[in-house]
Image 1 (cartoon, helix red, strand yellow):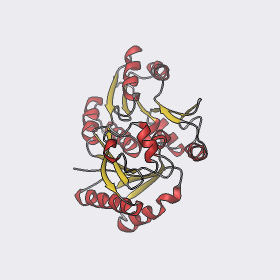
Image 2: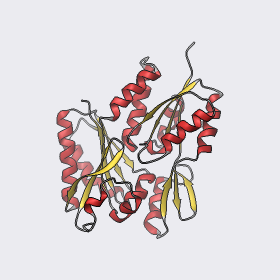
Image 3: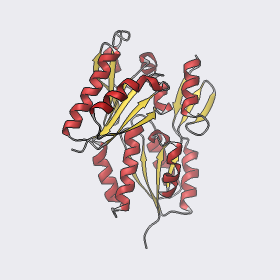
Image 4: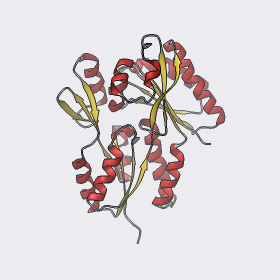
Length: 285
């Protein structure tokens, strides 16, 4: 008898309202992370939209933080899933940046619900890509164990590069492992940030936004020459017009690429600020 399999991911995967039917058809359950304005707490994508989040962020001086789903949120989810499914494949945001992955596994163990787990080492568009690839593999007949192995290989090929808008906010967040390398020089540079094995690191230090965008395009060009999947992601934090110039350059240069233009997830925007620009792709080899 074929086992009934559910899928679990989190709100950092950037699924939008138009994805809801596809998520439902494929038994994918998205658990929200939290964003906090002072003492007010909101479930990402449920209690506050991305647009509302960035609008408020741009107008307030109150402390803004993010937090992982509560253990109880996952326990409730897995107790519910246990009634209709035999096991789940779970794919979460990088365990280096959030406790979401470990809390999800802990909750599944507590309710005795079998899960096959993947720490994506990343979030946003690449995490969404990994979930979709997992579904494709499942429909092709691969077992959960085989799918996990393939997704572990795929995470090594996921790339996400950010140009943060607010370096002071980023410094306070403590999310960049080598941030000390630019302390004392915050006003003079635009760093490029990238994920490496789940951690965010500064990979290049650049003097102006124009040069930072050029460096971003140069990295995309190198990856394109070496082979990437034909779907990439371009994310903006609150200000859609901040990416229009970059978007047009990519369209002009790569007419075979499908470009998903998405708001940057609030739990990332909390740390990088309104106006952050992010580009993501997945390499083939």
